[in-house]
Length: 341
Image: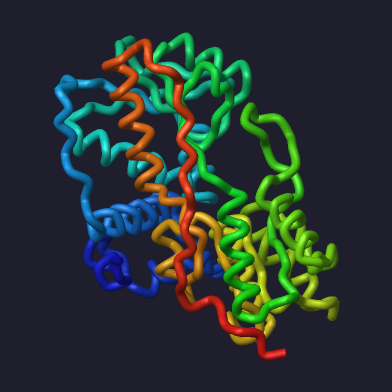
């Protein structure tokens, strides 16, 4: 894994600046360009420090042109870098395979290439509306979705098994003696076609804890999946004197980072006073303070698999649309202890 020193050498920013950016220090003011450079460097160094995938030589033309459509704008990706890393790893896979990349632009919900051009496949990263899906499918018949599966009969897709991830995290906490466990995240999010729906991680959490006879609705902390909202939600509970869980499952890294900040601001400590498990496990999880125990979504593998699906579909236009469900893994770090009370 990359270190703060390596990131400092790579980016030219100080270790202090990088650390404060990665931990979403609210007193730290930096430009979006600086934050983007630090987040992208963290992803690249993390990727290169692991085993690099071999260049694919399958007989497919090395000059494939792959278009990428993204759900989030660059500014939105800085708030939730998960999609930034999915894109970066997809680009890296294309580079390893000798494919060229074209980024589609979005205006008023519609996607198009920056200049009239043809491409051999289209990778759609994130969740898209019905109208956007029709727009994308009109641009290319070879369309693969990454992190959503809007129509399994039509489009190949790569998604995560969220239920397994939630159960891994909760099994881990229970095995360490936690019984008062909370969830930090929204009650509603977007479904596979960008329609409001119950948030799946939260629902799997409720189902699991109910089956165990341990569910307490007072430990559901409602917050958007941003550091600022998560910090505010947990701080409000702490300052009100309300009951606190001994452990918290955060819907994503930004929420987990916000929870750490809330505890720190209120003279509480992670994990001594509250253990925290995060979802996603991008490079941010290894560089925050403390490093976060995380449900790894295997972003590099998800992106590489999606690019490989595009190449396969290009070779075999009659292949059935395949939905690949990636199993997450729990990565142990320093944000979980056995409860004191």
